Image (tube, rainbow, N blue to C red; front, side, top):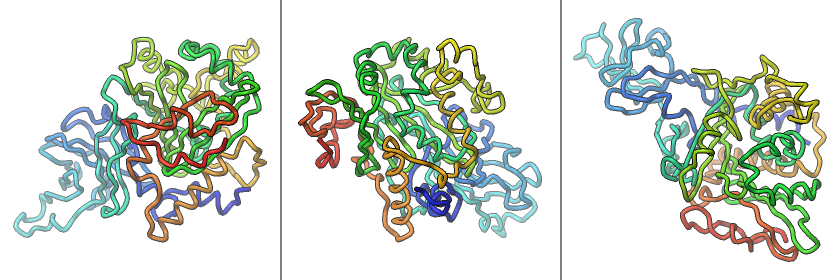
Length: 432
């Protein structure tokens, strides 16, 4: 059982908290490039890990992520003028560059150099793989940019969406790692998805054994969460999800479909961003796939225009359709995979009280995820680098495979090589 104290440690990510310091050792997704489309475009307010920040692109196209508030009188710089390589506060004209350095205080003589003594808190903001990433930790501990396969494929082979959700990041992440819920929550939606119909064999394997064995194991970057089903008297059907520290999940694709995953980024302790990505390692998306993603289907969802708030949200009960539930068009009455996930995840409240849970065998992956996070947070407190910062542990794929019952999982061809030919780390010791 997770205690109330452990629950607080796991869910609090603000400055100075153990989990917050862990998150700050990794590059995390912050914005989509289209939020800052061109030089001198309007700045964007953003909150990450309970810090209120402002993102902008200056006249030269350089990206900045700085404290939202002017060092003079605390005015929000969102109201500022983005011009001439800096952001100028509209109240008294103080100006800041992308590093947070004050470069002009109009009321003070320039020769005195007063502005050089003023600098706002600032973090690097880098465009990479269809996302604007930031690193909010100690500068001397900054790791290389993420090497995830989805962030390294060419344009046209990747699609990333973003939405805001009204609960703690951990509820969202644990929902993504809990594959068993698909048998119920997504069951009727999955059968109607035209892309999933490309792989009737895998769907059949899942339906054949409704009581799979869950076998989570530590990997260099996080966890392998392996699900094993009886496929025949001589074979097992395996599906292996990759969880990568601190907040990314890669789930197995169905045959012919894009690979996919999520990254769950805390806004504060009661809200989070979900970044969802589909990608093809070997080819561009076809029109059917592109249309589905743009329409907010699959792991994506429709949002209110001009915002990242889902169209179906807690204020409208996720557009619950009892008639669709009764007629068997939706198991839970909410339409869409992402919307279904949000409905159950947010229904727990802003922060779930995990001390009241009654966990079972299908929750082994969730239990190990919590243990892995707590262990990694302690490592950071002790001055040790947490796992999953290196490229080799990030260049992995989720996969599914049918294997003989007496074969070790690491004998699966998909387990031997990850993205870009990098050997899959630590495959020995996985169960038979």
